[in-house]
Amino acid sequence: MKGMRNSHHQMTNEQLQEELKKPCRVCGHESKGFHFGIVTCRACAAFFRRTIAENKIYLCRQSGVCPIRYEKRNMCRACRFKKCENVGMNKEDVQLNRDPIKPPPSEESRPEQLPTVNSPEEPSTSQAVQLEPAYREPILVRAVHPYDMVLLNKMLDGYRSYQSCQKSLYVVKHPRKLGATADPEEVKLSEYNEMDKGCITLTHQMLVEHFEPFSSFSMEDRLKFLQSFYIPFTVIDQCYFSSVFFPSPSETRFYLHYRQYVDSKNLITFFDTENKPEESARFVRFLFDRTRRLINRLVALKICEIEIAALAGLILWTIVTSNLEAESPVIEQKRNRIYFELHKLYFHLYGAEDAGVRFGGVLSIISEAMEIAKLCKESVALSKIFNMTSDKHDLVWSEF
Image (cartoon, rainbow, N blue to C red; front, top):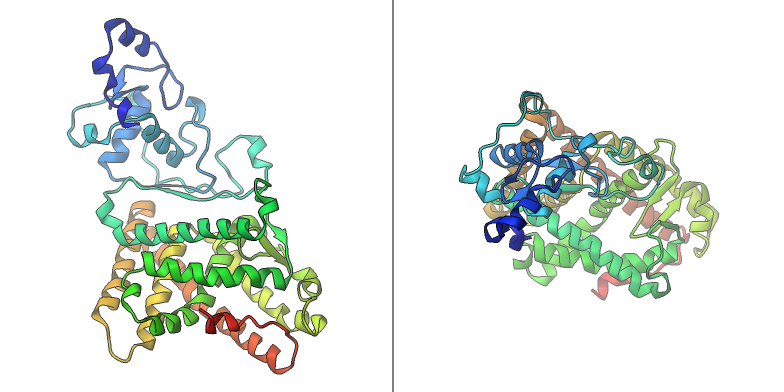
């Protein structure tokens, strides 16, 4: 959109008059001239100016494509700001104070609410979309200066890259499903394990490329850290996607890897390739009940993917610290920086009063995820002792 910015300076008078007759490029309302390089109404110009000037951050709990019309332009500030950027409104004009706007009192005097976080049950979209049970990927609109959250943004990029690579892995394993709907499908343990083997490699790649200084450790140490990190990371990752796809408290389905789920009512089918499917199903049923409680907490918190990325970083550096023979100031600095940036994010999103509450609530997820991961490991070990499993999944670590 850079080519569109301030393009009215190169227009002829006739072209300029025609452009000024057009509606607001953001919401479609009657425009009031060029603001920040684009024809907009006063309300959208004021909204854009305040967002940049006050370093605001907005979240969208939907797919990031909420319709922005002037009748409902305040329903989702994240998508409204995203559209401002997409049509080419120039942030530099705000910073240089070259475009003062005086909106009507009804718009300017309205108290600015905390950034809207829309839940899956209250989407800022049309009724047709409300009835659609498809996944809505939360987005973060970064309206703060990039240096404020360098570490969080890098980990977020890594987490998103991990999810994208999962999709590619799925297509490689299921080429016939390319282009099909992305709804998750019920799978068996053998199918899950096939994806899981690839996801271990993808997790290692994510840590090396986006979680510095993980790449500086020896391959032996990285493997040791990865073995301890992978299960708790998978717990928070899959609980997060379960909270998005299956948010109902009474839901029995649990999201696994990309486009996979298991139903706790059909565990015998899930384990039907094992030596003792019925015993395996009985043996792990309590784990699904325990995990559902964590999922319900994530639903209540309306957890965002940048928070999952932050939790992954905190879990990783806690594991690394506990496995190092000596203290590492670098690792401790990384962990403290995550705390700092996360709290700063909450201060922007929720204000001074509620930032601490959110901070504590999200961080408490770590201990619960670690406990579930521990129970998972114990269950796997016991299932081998009692010859319930025929899986050779552990071989992937020796072949890594």
